[in-house]
Length: 139
Image (cartoon, rainbow, N blue to C red; front, side, top):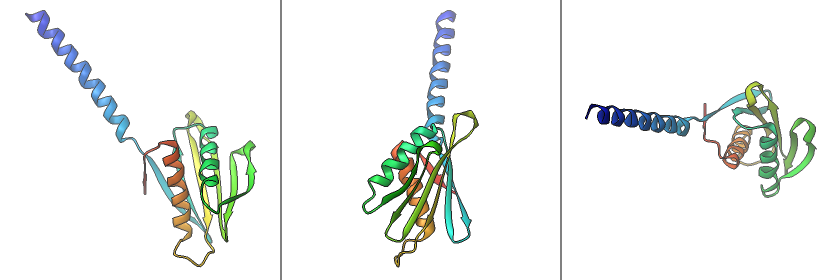
């Protein structure tokens, strides 16, 4: 009887540890930081993805955005520049230590619309995070 109870307790503890580990993975989110740099707005986020994966996502997101045209593509440093009308977006994936990548998106909206530089930068980062399947929150 004692041996059975000890085994049952060990199995429950193991199951609990697995459940808690899974929950921790579900609540981990990337934090998008906003930085204003002069007339442009920048959004930054550290992602647990390779620069190659992030760069591929940048290109996919920009290419599927209606009216957005890539004006410069620099695969060697994982960056692009793109325009949509008078709006301008620059995005870069910087390799960090530990296998993470810093995504930096800088935007300038010159169109006469309600879209601000901040909206454009954050929307681009959000679209890239969604494309990569990364949960995020804006701080």
